[in-house]
Image (cartoon, helix red, strand yellow):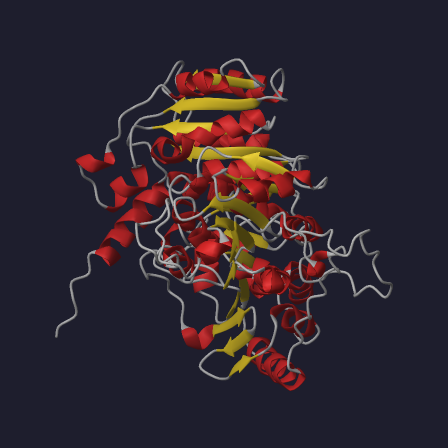
Length: 589
C-alpha cells in the first residue's frame, strides 16, 4: 500500500561526475525544468497553452520522457495534476500568466488542503518588463505584476519567480525539492523569454535530488513510545483509526506492522479510505460518527482508548462536530507529533518511526475485535425489485461493488457519491480517491483524467453527480483524446443533492442535460467512446456487461436516471447534522 513513487527516498548522491554537454552554454532553463520533472516521477504534465508559456512548452514536449496533456481549461488541468499526484506521488501543470494562474488556483488550493506535492508552473512576463511602468495584457491593468504571486502565497508552500537566469537553477530546484519535502504545491513563474536561452548553470544534466531524510529526535521518540505503550497497555478495548495524513507521512507499511502486532480493530476516517487494505482481518469499516459503517462507530466510541493516526477533524469529518470522542482517551499521531491523552505532546517524532517502534512495545489485545465479531450482523440486501422498477441508487452501488478488483480504482465526487462509495469494500490493490477536506464540486472529472493517465494498468470507475459534472464536463474530451478507458457513472437526479440535504431551496435544482448526447457530441467519431442511458436494473446490468466486455478498451459513460430524492441514509443524517452546525446562532456577547 506504499505510494508508487517514493518521493523523499530518492537515490543517494552520485559519486561520478555527469557528462557535461558539448558546449559549456548548451543547457537551457527549459530543458533543465523538463529533466527535473522526469527525474521526480512526472511523465505527464497537464496544462493549457497561452502566449506567455508557449516557448516553455516547446522545451517540455522536446523532453523524450515527458508528455504534455492539453486540457480544456486550467482548473481541470489542476484537478488532473491533483489526481496524477495521488497515483504517482507528485504532479505538475503548466498555465499562462494571471488569466491561467487565477483560473487554476482553486485546484491548487485543493491540492494544498489534501497535502499533495504539485508543481504549478506559470509562463510569466518578459524579464525586461519587471520593474518598468508598463501595463501588460492578461493582467488587471496595473503595472504591478505581483497580483498572481500574492494569490498563490496562501495555497503553496513556496513561490519562485524566475526572471533572471543567474539564479534560475537554484530557484527551480529549491521550489521542487520543497514541494516534495513538505508534500504541498509549489508555484514557479518563468519569464517567457528565458526558457530557450543557454546558460552555464544548465550545462550539465541535473544531479539527482537527494532530499535530506527526516529523522526523529531519538529522546522524544523513546519518550513518546514509552508513554503511549503505558497508556494503551492499561486499556481494556483499544482501537486504531486511520486518517488521511497517513499518506503524507508515508507510513502505511509501519501502520500495518503495528496493526498486525497489536491485534486492535482497524477503522478508517472517511478521508483515510484506500490507505489501508480492507481485506485485513481486523478491518471493521469507516468511523464517521453518526454515519459510520454499521457496528464500527459503536466499537470506536465505546473503546476506552483510541489511536488516531494522521487524522483531520473538521465539520464534515466530525458530522457537524458530533463525534463522541474524548481527548483523555485518545492518542493523536500526526506526521511529526504525538499527543497522549491529556498528557504529553512530543514534537519532531515522525509517524513511521513512532509506529514502527510502538509495534514492539504493545501487548496484543483483541478484546475490541472480539466484541465487534459478537455484535456484527452481515449487510442486508436491497429490497427485491419489481420488474421494470425505476433504478434505485443502492442497486447501482451493489453492482459497482461487483465490478471492483485489484485492477480498478474508484474516484468519488463530492456529494452523495461520498457516502455511497464509502460503503464499497475495496479488494486488495483497488485504488480509491476523493476530496474530503476541500470538497470542490467538479473535482472528479479532472482527477479521473489525471489518475487514469498515471495508472494505465488500472481501470478507473468514477461516480459523479450531474451538478458536479456540469462544472467540469469538458475534459471528457481529453480522456477520449488520451485513449483512456475509464467508466463514468453519471448520477442524474436533477440537482445538488448534498446541498438539498443541508439546506434546500430552488437554487439546488439545475437545468437537465442530455448527458449521453453531450458526450456523444464531444466524441464526434474520434477515438473510442461508448455511452448508455439506463433507467432500470436490467438496463444497468446490460450496460455494465457491455462496458466490461465489448467496450473494455473504450471510455464508457453510463448515465444513471434516478429519483431526485433517492439518496443514501447516511447523507440524510449527515446533512441534518451539518445543517445544525452551520445554523448555530452567534455566541452571546
